[in-house]
Length: 246
Image (tube, rainbow, N blue to C red; front, side, top):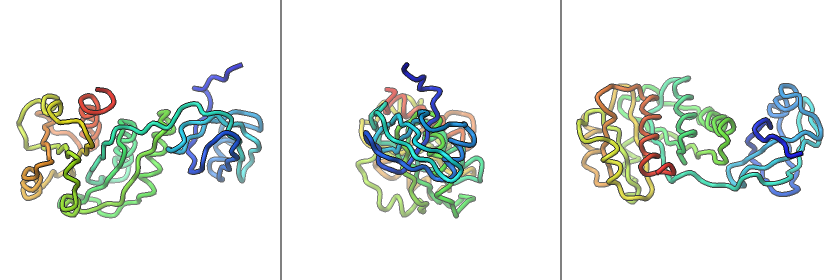
């Protein structure tokens, strides 16, 4: 009988996945498999690693200290999302978790924390961002986990920017055209999205951004949004016009 895949637990592993491969699960994942889900030897599990697609595996052994599984068959190939970087000014704890999760769900290929003049969080736990991205990918049946880069100052990022990647700048001071109209006029290719801190960009930062030829300013409308809300709004607009929803 073909298993109901939706009912089979799904985990991320940083190990190669291929037919017949043996994969070891660490203590935390073994606890989830054995202690929480009550799975045992012979039960199925789904694994992905962001490189080799999603795989159906069979549990060989499971206990408190670890678990071993064997890859049986590939369920889905590795398909990368559109080439979209999500650049954001870090927020505090729970809201930063939300941004990492939602940007992953919305199809960002890379998460890039940006330190601006008004950023309130200057030291990040990159491991926490990665954990949130992995959790979102596990729960949403994604076969890809975005790369999480270390935080960098905005000025340094702009100084070393690849002009071939258009930068969609969420400009809260803009009262321009509809964002859909603006985005539809952007040529296909590598993209990035930039959302600023709660206090917005300084006039100097905004002037620098608007002077750059690769920057595309976009308004998100007449209402002021929190930065975590803006993350979902702009990624939805970009995916609908330039990403894999278009």
